Length: 116
Length: 114
Image 1: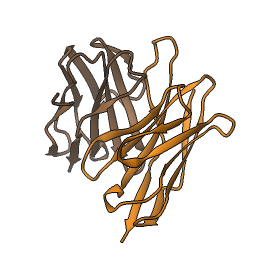
Image 2: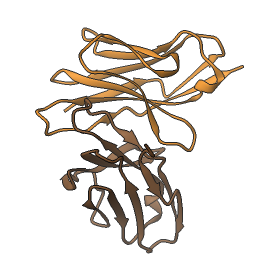
Image 3: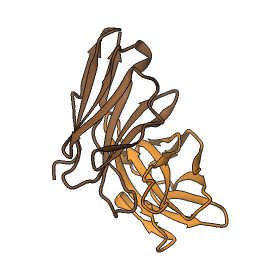
């Protein structure tokens, strides 16, 4: 079974600073990896996804993530934080097991705070 | 596209009452998922459907919970009887076949059981 670990339940950065949110996964087969963002009182919105194409994935709002198989990691970065980035971020993993398993396994989330 | 639609957005009820949450997935999506989110347990998958058929209900906490999908455009999650520990935000998500398992989430229903 696959699993996800997000390191740090709360990350605080200054506006304009680098954002780095960490995600490590476990999977016995090549995974699909996702980052979702949740703004207060809203549902989850897809930021980006890795599906075995390019290892550096670019998403919306200036975010990107790099798939590193050797480190089993899929960390999320943004060069310069904006106040509007304050939200909770979830890493998720899924596997393509012949069309029978479409579940996503989510990490526990990282709350990002951006200070002015 | 209207996205995934959930109703009601907020529900407050008393312990012992029946609660029904509703979801309309995105048209053409083959998969529908029900999740529960709490501070303590995070985001939990309760059940998911493929082409209206329940595939995996191993996350349903107990017999008080039931879910149905009578057609491709409607699903319900029912709790009977409700208990205070059921208080949570319940999300519905849908996914089209062939989109690398990407899921599209609704805005959620915030349930409070007094």
